[in-house]
Amino acid sequence: MTKVELEYDLVRKLEDSDADAVARVHGFYGIQRVNIAPALDKIHVSYDASRLSPRDVEGALVRYGVPIRRA
Image (tube, rainbow, N blue to C red; front, top):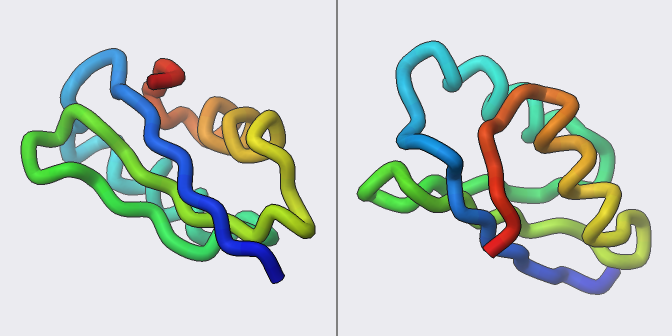
């Protein structure tokens, strides 16, 4: 297992309605942790690079509705 962390800027600050999208990303195979910055303007994703590529991670975030922009 190779743990890698990516940081994404958020297009907008997260709102309560985004909580479900972030929670669903936690269940995506190979994603280990999702942390939101205290200012609610960035998201950090730890994942297993032996199972996923950065493109896979970004695709999962977009698919689940997390409003990201690559940092």
